[in-house]
Image 1: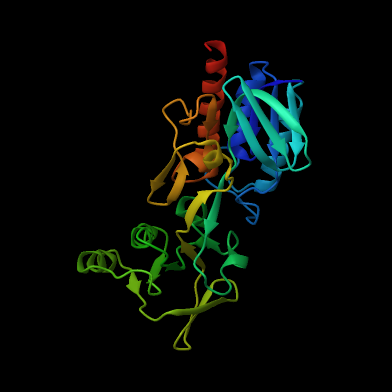
Image 2: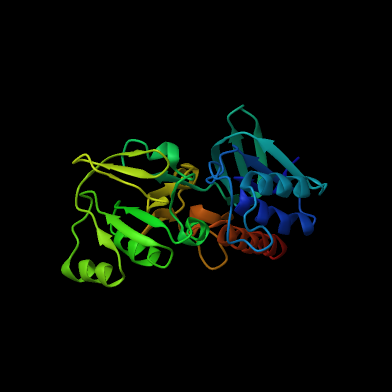
Length: 294
């Protein structure tokens, strides 16, 4: 059965878009690989009514609510190809099954590129974070380390002085100009010039000179790119942002390819659950309007 809309990615943005369309009684298919960006985190913060909730439980409850709508179909799997044009798209999944739909929404999230520091990847989302609004409060004004990863890192360090005692560790990724150096000091941050050997324990930093700095938590600004290559393969315009690359959309969340929309982290910065949900809801309503006035 042809779908009105196929949503690639069933995390918070994708499900928020789906909810608007389901309530408009549109037939929709969600294809989800089960790789939420915050799957390593045990708690999610900053989202009204869900502050401190388990993000996995949030996602599970959202899926249950969506599947209560008779027009919603959920497919667990990877979308591997997308062809066609407005009103005649075909999505192919890894199992070889094809699905046809009039509109497509990419809500497939982003891939994080972390600094190549031993011990960082396995602590990502547990004791190493990117968003102070999501995780800063729980550090209880303790010691915070900010690991350099690019031009945004000094800005991140300045901002995080609102949440604790910050030590900025450039780790040879950038050279601070005098003005930035002075701003960090004025904000009360300290600057550690020694390189990083590895991350140990929960959030401690082993420096190249053998010293260990202990922190309540670490922050880093990873460079991101869309997790799915399908938008690029289809011809969607990709734009550079200070955080990396994302799918470019207009004010209606439509990409440069007619009939294809994008929302959430894959088409929005900065990133958080609450922002992704809002962006997904906007995309869902705009896609519905495009079907009404096609």
